[in-house]
Image 1 (cartoon, helix red, strand yellow):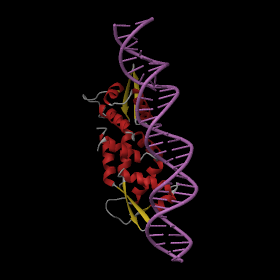
Image 2: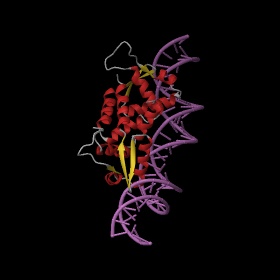
Image 3: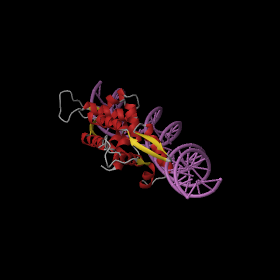
Image 4: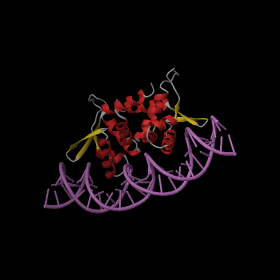
Length: 100
Length: 100
DNA sequence: ATAACGATTCGATAACTATCGAAATACATT
DNA sequence: AATGTATTTCGATAGTTATCGAATCGTTAT
């Protein structure tokens, strides 16, 4: 991954509300393999749990998608989000590699 | 680490030039144990290798220090930078933990 | 002492961003 | 059809930031 893309990803994670949003999405679908405790992440629930308005959430979600950190799927009137696990693992490794 | 602090760290890494600066500092001192290939990271050299002005570099270094990502040491008229390896490892783990 | 060099501070500017309220869109339910 | 709910778009605003040139400060070398 080149520096510019990495910076873009960090930028997407650099706002406290957006980072919390990302973490919430990640927590919902916790494993690569479906489990009993897995559940889908509806944006409505997030809006209730973070105290910022719906337009702002919408904006943050677009930023996360734009950085390729999450993907979304429309189901009826709801929006479902899930994280791009490969990308975040790549970023994690990029950071820990720096120290070797 | 709480979300706010994590967001602050990501913000510090969110500018391409600043991220490259950070990586260069990290590359200079590559291991926790001193080796033959280790060398100290002088800001002068960085200024030459990135093509942004000295005032901007100075600003970026302050941001990295402020996020606790690096520490600095003045030696004569030179400034030496080194990364806080524990912190970046912590961040790396925070990201990879999200997927379990 | 004075010049040269490394780094910082200052002031300015242009660009970006988080957030909001209001309005609009889309879907679902009655 | 009409209402309600979920989400998006729009326009505005206040705040932040990256970058620069000029000036300044410290240190070293002549």
